[in-house]
Structure formats: C-alpha cells, structure tokens
Length: 246
Image 1 (cartoon, rainbow, N blue to C red):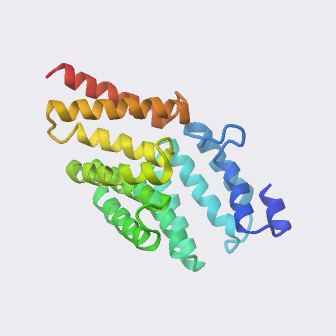
Image 2: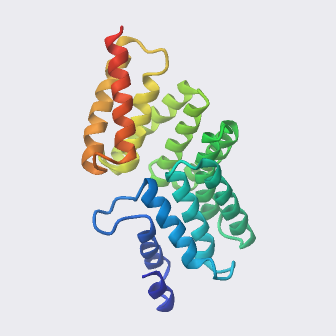
Image 3: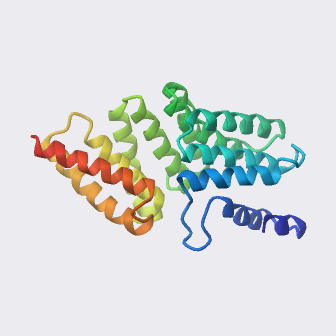
C-alpha cells in the first residue's frame, strides 16, 4: 500500500494513511501494542533498510523500530533508535514539527531510563512550541501537555503534573470529546496525580470517581487488554485501597 502511494504520487495525506498500517489495525482502528507492535516495527525496518538514507521511509522506518521497542518496554534500545532518527531528519533538513515528534518519543524513553530531567526539558520545549503554533485546544498541543505531565510524574514532580493535567482536561473534553484517546490519557494522569499529592479524603474520592469513569470509557474505546486500560485499572485499585485504609 505504501509502494502504491509512492508510485502513483498520491500525496502526503495518502502516504501517511497507508504508512499507518504498520502501527494501526485497519479492521478495529486501534494501535498495535506490546510484542505485536515490536514485531511490526522490525518488519517495517527490514522492508526499507536497503533504501537510500535520503529516502523518506528509511528514516521513518527507524522510528517504527523505536516505537516497537518502546511498546515492548526496551527503553534503552528504543532511545538509541529515536536518537538515530532525530540525527537523520536533521541532516535531511526536515521540518521542526517532524523532528519534534521523534524527540517526544525519545523523551518518553529517557524518562524510563532514569534521565527524567532531560525528558522534561525536551517535552516542555515541545509543548511551548506547539501551544504557540496551534493553540491550547489543538490535539497535538494537548498530547504534548499529557506527555509533559507524564515526565513530571516520573521525577516525582507530582504537584506540577496534577496542575498540567488538570488545566488541560476540560480543554480536551471540549475540543476532542470525552471519549477521545488524548482526553482519556489526560484524565488518567489527572486522577493518578491527584491521588499522589498528599490528598484529603475528598480528593481521593474525586480521583476514584474520575478514574472509574475513565476506565469505563477506556474499555469501550481501547478494549479490556490494552495497556492504557490495564494501567488505569491498576491505579484505580490502588486508589480504592488507599481510601479503604484511611
């Protein structure tokens, strides 16, 4: 499908839609995850590794390997791939928007490798640029806000993580809808951070109710076995345990 888009010069929009088959199921339209995502990342790389480095899919394929390794929790391996992709795209003079997308993935790996301060600096910078360029209600800006909150949470800057998620959750609900994937992950982060910042019983009950609603929506949107759903379910169990022990 990607080859057809290239041969017939179908344009960037069609190319991106075709390329998404490497990471998204065409039947249920959900992203692949875990070992399946990892296997498809390597399959993508093997498909394009023989192409010239100036050929666009060569660079994107490096990112697919990185995304697969990240999904399979090989964070150091994924970081190396994303660093290589950033360096290649800079050599090819790709737009700052494209490079920032790869840097966001790189930062997600760095925070899992104990390099949280570096991750926060990258994500804060990207969030600021996207907010200036697209406005606060844009999906890309909201996703960048969620990623920044995650990085802050990883280095135990929980109060700021709660503030970032809480500020952007109502915006995401208005702009994207309550069942949108970005809205759901922001809601999860807001509930999780709210339950970690020396909460009162009222704040814990708020976090529990928010996460109950979020988990129910995630089950419908992502399915029961998706990592987003399972992680949110685990955090909901912890919040309920905390409330029971008060």
